[in-house]
Image 1 (cartoon, rainbow, N blue to C red):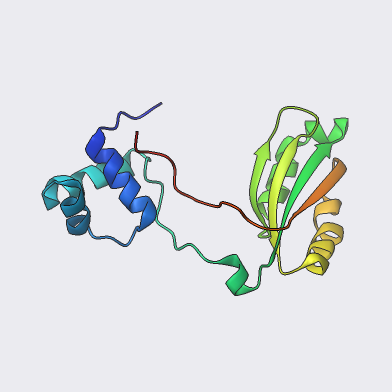
Image 2: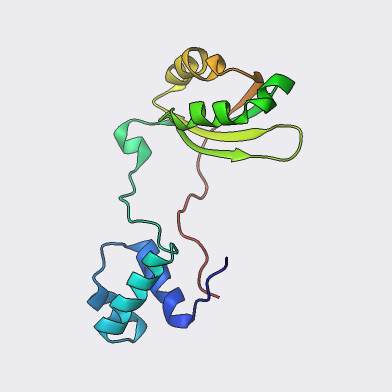
Length: 156
C-alpha cells in the first residue's frame, strides 16, 4: 500500500536520509514546522513503516572491503524448486549485501563485497558454489564506483 506523503513529510524524509542524527527540532526548523508536529510526523512514518530504521553507513574501503563483485546466478531446474533453501543460504552470507530475483536469462543478482579477489575466490569456492541448485555463476568485478547512494528521490 502506497503512503500519502505531503510536502512536509517529503522534506523530513529527505533530511533524514542525508543525516539521521538530526534532532526533531533541527528538522522542524529546516522544514518550517514547530518541533511537536514534526516529531509526530516522524513517529507516524516510523509506525507506518515508511521509516524502516536508522543506520550508520560505513565506507567499505576504509574498513578493508576493497572489492565489489556482482554475481549473476542461474539455478538449475531442481534449484528453482528449492527457492527458499537458496534464499536462506544467501541471507546467511555476510559478504552478500544485496540479492535480487530477476526476470530474464539469470535468476538472481548478488552484490558481494570482500577484501580482495583472493577473498572472493575463497568465498566463491567455500560458500557460494556449495549452495545446492546453482547451475551457473557469472562474476563481474566492479572496477570503480561512479554513484552509490541510499537516498530515495522523495522530493518531487
